[in-house]
Length: 582
Image 1 (cartoon, rainbow, N blue to C red):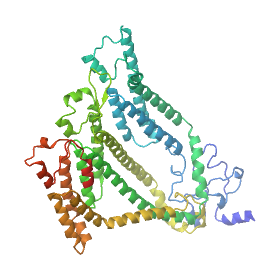
Image 2 (image 1 turned 90 degrees about the vertical axis):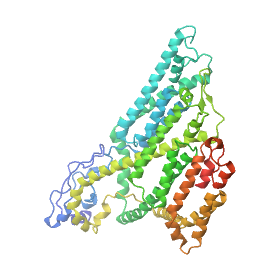
Image 3 (image 1 turned 180 degrees about the vertical axis):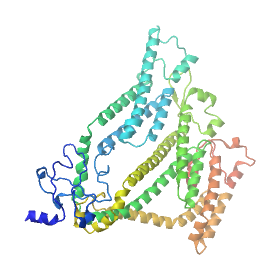
């Protein structure tokens, strides 16, 4: 009965015997071989893009039936790297392991070498740490080229530093007594100290670890990373494909056409909403990070972040889309933040603090803080404990802002490269799609659709759609009622900061509130609210510099300036007033 049934299904197909498998289970290499060399001329729409996959080894000399075939749609390239494990991407486990190794462990040891010792070598480590987020994502191509060269460079620098330290200690140890040629406060001693080469006599264990241990641990970690990468990439590829292929072949075969079409429709509705929420969330995170970096220490250098913060707020108030110009500006701001961090680190050196004293007007208004101070008579740098909390948080905020913006910019660049590659692949497959347009329309009602490959992920995702729908609905409600929050904020601002300048907000809010179409008028006048609020924030930002009232030389006394709306706290952080006004 089964033979008759198979013969009935294949009435229009001439028998074909297979002498070898189309997919060898040992090597897992896909070989192209048409399943039918001759087709009936009356069924010309069945002659394209049909490839056979033998399901059992004992069927080598049997005639193929329709049940032993997997039909691949003509709009899908059956030999695409997305369907099989022939791609050059790393497996999920390998990618996760290398990501933890390179993006977490290696930056951590570099940061240890930067913080616990201030020298030119540590400055080089700081530069390499800032370069790390621009190397791209963890892929096999980047691992073989960029990351391998980066890790080798770190290992070489740390090795040279360790060798230089050994040679230096051997030289001064050979000249008895130990270190008698290196006197304090001499030019030679100061120069050697900038490179981390110091005498170790009369030193405790902590000082020895601080001077030597960072280079040793960086060299050890870089060596381990290089060894693991080399070992990982030298593994045979069929081991990775053996792990990747079953998950990609078994699940689609068990999926029916009804569930596939349902999942496709649900994902088409789910992903646009999810991407919209993620896009708004990412913009909000960028808005918060830039504002925090600007307000935590009002100064000339940090004013660039403040200007960028105002630009984002103004664009948001006009409901203008953030295009490529914003992406370019964000990349430039990330580079500026990196230069700012290196300058801040250089200011911890003694020669920089001698040129620009820590307790001076220019150091306060520029935003350079001496967290660590040192002099030629002391062997250990002293930690400045007399600063306020914003002085310590400022470099941390800059570091977080830099890494976030650098990763965001690098991700967008990677997406553009991948989109260009996808465009090239689409052009290569255009002929297949063009030749099978009529064939696809007929195949939609064919029972063979149950045995086709599905690119979509199986499974019911209605609960995800409900969660996304709830979040999206809440955001829409908040967006619709944002004008009420704006009016309440203006009233609270005018009452909390009682002055002549904030009186304008009070009158403005009361006037709009009594209008019949208050929401429409509030949205129309939102750019003017933003401009006036930005002017008040700029004024508060300027008077929030770390200076005293007498240094500004105003024409009026302190009480008169406070009534106008200018309140100055001598050498106190202006973060809280700025945060409340924002």
